[in-house]
Length: 281
Image 1 (cartoon, rainbow, N blue to C red):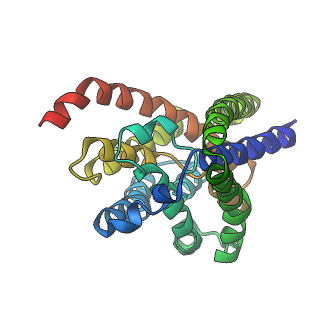
Image 2 (image 1 turned 60 degrees about the vertical axis):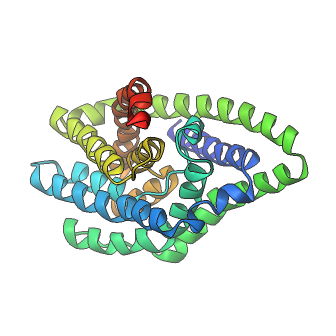
């Protein structure tokens, strides 16, 4: 049952990325590349500030080894391809999509580098290298993304309609499969204690705050970067967890996704109430 659910999650993630590609253009892709200052600030937030801050948080708390390991894995697994599509309306045109693609490419180098540090911090060796990460990103992210963008170039109106439908269906399937997997592993999750689960939520809060503070002067860009920082690349996180931990670490990674969703919801609502004032200011 667990294996089937994991397969469904992988297929849903691939379908979501394909849907993103169907609704995106080459101009969206190069948005950040034409703005080096914003590019550097965004990548520093996702790949330097968040891993360092979350690692310090994990080391400061008296957590079980499996929870500490899961938090480290989550901290380095930036490059989230599953950002809410509606965020593209908050930031400037193309920002979210360009950030997702660029950060995923940076993951090829950044994740193995952090894994080396992770091994020394938690006392475990990691067999994860850049070629493994590159292969994962190429198969599970770049291939469906490029295919979707090619189809968009050939038939933009049809691709856009298909994108909206595919994103909606795949999102529901992914949510149901992930929640089912969490329910099946609920006993193990409760066994680690509420302090550990609250630490996962604290990790999300820290990442959200860093993204908001480093997002720049534009309110929409701040919100987009905040959600980018709190979101994790599911495929990379699962791969990293499998190389240094067991099934429990994988379940904690999924638990973080739920915690992040709970933390993110009030932040998005707060932004909707205060967005007009922020822009006016």
